[in-house]
Length: 594
Image (cartoon, rainbow, N blue to C red; front, side):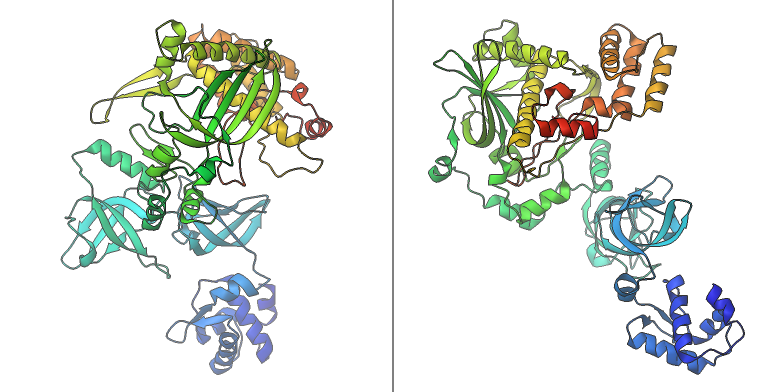
């Protein structure tokens, strides 16, 4: 702006005119201007011909591009790569309910705020290029100048049909556009139908609509099914896999070869079973138990070895990375991997050999671990238990493997008691369970009962996670790249607010020291079982960041082998560290890693 004032009402030299014209485009990167408009905006006395010469030079250098009617705009390639005066970043859109968004960029301490009118029709999760326009205070504000990658290409909406064309109006109000559908791409859709449409052509210019193909007409009489599909599609999840991914999955070997087994610890003769919800279709972890000749007991915790089937760089690997997780709704799952993997090859089904990662622990008669082993294995599950079935066996019902269940339950209780004595926090929030009819429609809601078998499985998974983390931390003088999830110490102000909140409910929460905080949380958990008001207040602690440090979660990743299994280990404090390196980490982070 200052430079423009300096030349106001003057005739400037060609080189400076070229610079001022480019600067004008840089300040308004989406604006289309001709020579006369530039003269008016710069307020110079140069002729249209001289400005046109400057524009021709800028176009030749690739800094601007001709649109039509002698109008030009800033070249995107120049804006993105060559101009050091314009601050641009690549990141992902985090959309707000108001329609505005924050662009989350790697390497930046702050997200870039973008008003709705400057999002360029970007949607939640899209990868975009953003130009910083201003920094009012500490908060940067910008404008999306390019959409690099769409998070989703499928949408649910209402189809509006006319004689020569049709539009799909998306249900999600955060999608600020209608999708144009040519007659040949409308299929059997009729005016007013609820449809699923896939966008095949995104507009490169503002004001234009994306073009799509109707892939499915939804049965509006089945309101529940439409709602479930809408939830998944509108949040960018897809029930179907690309044909290349399905083809790759179908070509995987169904039979485990002998040469594969020979490279693994063979545990197929060890008593092994899974314990899962009664409605589970995939079984990704299992427990085993055997008694050794020295009178000790060996417990195995096993997880499916997905990395054997999903190799780095394959279509399966790329699709799994894109999806990141399986999504569980009331009556269905949008899986991270095709069904042949999630429900078959990588499911530890009974009476089948399965490839696994295993953690084996030898316990002496005092329930102390005297030997550990971690590695690739092959197992054979003898039985699939539902939690309720395993609990009935523990309670006295006749059942196969009752002896093993009783032994594991006894050991789990010892491990749990030790964990509590060492600083773990006992939070048990009630879990909601939906009862479905024969058509998978919800008909009732009830609180899921917490059984000993739930706690049994949790305790052994926590054991495996802690031991793997400690094993890695001790493995070498050099740190091995590994994923630990460490939470900062609590925000004292928020902790104080929570304490005052509980005081109003008649509960004294002492937050003066880590030990007092731990004891207060455990007392709260016990009192919540007897007091409905405290039972209402307890979950707020789990959801707030006041408890982040105490929950002390570790994310265990078995990369680079290709498989990631996630479990949670709660509440171990400084005294669980055994190495100087670990003690140093504690002093730096003020919270335990393992």
